[in-house]
Each structure stands twice: as structure tokens, then as C-alpha cells.
Image 1 (cartoon, rainbow, N blue to C red):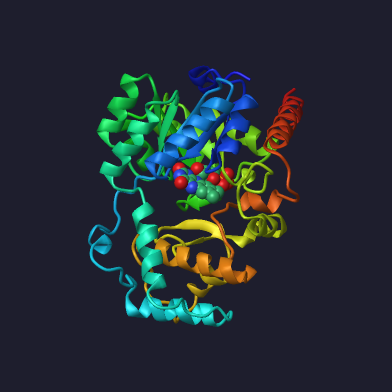
Image 2: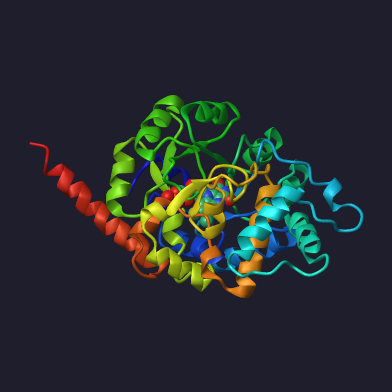
Length: 369
Ligand SMILES: Cc1cc2nc3c(=O)[nH]c(=O)nc-3n(C[C@H](O)[C@H](O)[C@H](O)COP(=O)(O)O)c2cc1C
């Protein structure tokens, strides 16, 4: 295939894969597409991940994606002194009520406080932390750096461009897209509301052509609800230069997701992937669970700001994992999970997409007299 995005990165097919799993990233790049690693880990861990990708990608291009929220609750004070429970009493009480209803007991002593301290310490969302991660990133042959939430800081754009690295950003509206273009990005990813993870409210079908028109001639990738060849053909018909997929890789053999969550994804329908603020504090489409559903009830307290809401979710998942009540197992996931019927491989998924894409294009071609 040949689109401007294929030319920009020297790739054979304009399929981008977002994943936190390095094996998925490598497999997609090796299949002729472009893998992008979710990079929100410790700098030392990032170094290990990128070195592994370099050793296994066979010289194929890949990218990295960082979560850079414009706004989040300050966490520095929470990391000082003795660990203490950081949840407001109403939120602690609600969490314990939901867990108790499934027979999960409270954590003993200050274990919850220690868990929170550790989880907060691992978060990488402040600008100074990004710089550390970028220092690691720029020591590797990364070809694209993507900002997940909000505008990439000017020093990121400058440093990347000085090294010949492209910068991208996810957007959920044409206004966001214009702001990103003005911040100097080289491509935008128009992510529709069908998508897994943090998402806006406009569907991919409506968003993609609006973003394409808003930032032309900047290339646009379509994301959200794309997991097969017909959806890929539709995205290109809408004016996108390629597709950016996340959820379709979740249940592949190369995904490191908990096998119990993979099973839940395979069994789920599209309507099980719901938008909620309960997961992280921002709108996020996730696999519905007893935790996310509890927040739709009238006794639920106000959702906390990022990252405090996510801290609660992490504790719930941690405790659920110990006791294994499958009701609580959840994960960010988009509506395409309703198309996933069995565990497959990344390579097979890419091949199936391309075969179906070719069929779809041929069928459309046959419609024109
Ligand atoms: C499990 C999961 C985690 C995600 N985390 C991020 C993230 O950290 N940064 C980001 O830019 N996008 C993230 N996304 C969104 C993806 O980049 C992508 O835009 C989205 O998955 C596309 O829609 P789809 O899920 O329908 O394929 C995530 C998506 C999923 C499914």
C-alpha cells in the first residue's frame, strides 16, 4: 500500500498498533505496519523495553506514546512522611462497601496506604518525569513520539524534530486537532468515541473527516472502532492516511494481559465496553465490571481527579486479583472487542485485516460504473 503515512515512515501498510506490550509492537512493525509502545513506565524499565524492541524489530520502525495530561492533582505532598490513606473518607467507605458486597475484606493495617504510596511513586505524568523518559527514548532509533492527552510540550517537539523524529498526538475533536497542529505535530490521530481508553464523545465516522478537513494537509490516522479490513477501508474512505488500533490486540497471544481478562474480552459484546470516569477520573472506555457499574449508582461519591481515582481502581484490581472475583477484572477496551471471538496472533490479525481490506476495496470498485 502507498499512503503519505507509508512514505513518511517507510512502512508497507498503514496499520499502527498502540500497545503496552513490546511483543505486540514488534510483531506489527515486523508485519509491515508500525508498532507504538505505551511508555508510561520507570526510565530504567523503559530502557529495557526499548533495548528489547531494538533487538527484535529487525530494523523496522516503531514509536512511543506518553500520557501527558494537561491537568492532574498534585501528588508530591502525598509522597512525603509516613504512608497514610490518601482517599477521602467517603471514597474509602464506598470502595470498602463495593468490595465487601463481593466478599473481599479490607486490607490489614496500613497496607492500603503503602499500596497507594507505591502506585503513586510509579506514576509518570509530570513534565520533569517526561524529560527523563524522553532522555531514554532519544537514545533509541524511535521514529515517532506521541502525546496521548493534551499538547506535547514545546521542548519535546523541538528535541524530537532536531533528531528527525516525528511527533503525533491523539485528538477527539477538530478544535483539539487545530491546537495540536499549532503545537507543531507532524500527524494527528483522530480517535473516535468507540475507542478503548481515554476518549471523547464524537464517533470515528463523524470525527475523522472533520479532523482531516481541519488540519489538511497534515496527515491523519483514524482510531476507534477499527479492527478489521472493512473498517480500515472505511477509515481511508473518510480521508485518513492510515489506521491506529488498540483494542484489537488485547486478546492476541502476544498481549501480556491477564488470561482471565483476555477470556472476559473474548466473551464480551460491544456494549460491555462502556465510557466511565470511574476508571481514571477522565472519560475512559473500559470493560464494564462491578467496580465501574457501582459508580453509576446514586450512592456513588464524586469521582476524584486524576490520578487519585485511578489509585482507587488500582487498589480494587489488586485486591480482586488476590481473591480472584472475576466480577472486578476490567481493562480499558473499545467497542471492537465485540468482534473478537477467539485468541489469535498479531500477525494473523494484520493479515486478516489486509485480506478483508483488499476485498472491500474491490467490492467498492465494482460499484462504480
Ligand atoms: C488498553 C488500552 C490502553 C490505552 N492507553 C493509551 C495510552 O496510554 N495512550 C494513548 O495514547 N492511547 C491509549 N489508548 C488508546 C489507543 O491509543 C487507541 O487510540 C485506541 O485503542 C483506538 O481505538 P480502539 O480501541 O477501538 O482500537 C489505550 C487503548 C487501550 C485499549
